[in-house]
Length: 291
Image (cartoon, rainbow, N blue to C red; front, top):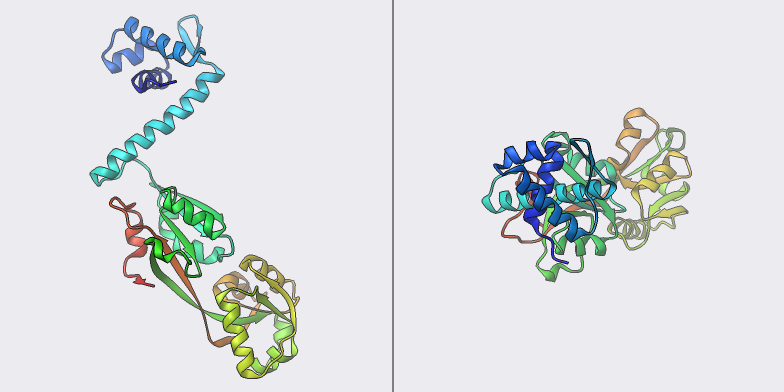
C-alpha cells in the first residue's frame, strides 16, 4: 500500500492544530477540501483517525499511532533537508555507539559538552563491537567508541585516537597499605584483571613475565564496570585505568597503589567517511590524531 505523504502532512496539521478549521486556515485550504483529503487518507489506511465529538475532533488510538509516526517522518525529512543544506534543523541529534565494556566515566567525559547542550539530543547505544560497526555502516550511528582497533579497518573506517589513559593498580586502602612496592603487591595480593584478549590484559601479562611474577588471579572480567565493583568489594587489587574508578579515588574508597609501567589504554572513535557528516562530531574530534 502506497501512502500519500501529502495527505499525511494534512492529517499532521489537523492533529496539531486541533481541528479542521484551524488547520485549513494555516494551510490556506477550504475546510471541505481538507476534510475530503482526510477521508481519502482514512480510506487508504482502513481506519478512522479521528472521532467526531460535536465540532471537535479527537484522535482515535490509530490516530495517535499515526501522529507519532508522522512526527518522526517529518522530523527526519526536515533533518535531511537541513543536513544537505549544511545547517542545523531544530534540536540536533548525535548518535553514539559504545562497546559494552568501555568505561562509563570515559564516555561521560568525552560526551560532556553535547550532553550539557540543551539543543542537542545524545543517543548512546551500547553493545558488541560488530553490531555497532554494522549500525555505523548503515548510517544508524555517527560514531563508535572503542578501546581496540577493529579488525574491519580495511572497510574504509576512520580511526581517531581521542584519549590515552595510564593503567594503574588500585584497591581498598587497607589492602594497599603503606610503603609496599608494586612488585610486592603484584606478587602477594589477589588480583582482579581484564579478561584475556584485551590490550590491557596482554600488556599486563607481558609485564608480569618481565618481572618474573606468577600473579594470583582472584577474578577476571571484560567489563570495566564489573572490575570497578569487584575492586570496591575488596576482592583484590584491580588492574584498570584510573578513570574507571575516578569517583572512588576521589572519595577515598579506593586508592591508587601506582601506575603500571608501560601499560596504557587507548580510546578510539571510529567513523565512516561521509559526504554529509554529522556536524556535531567536528568539535569532538578536533585535533585528534588518526590512529
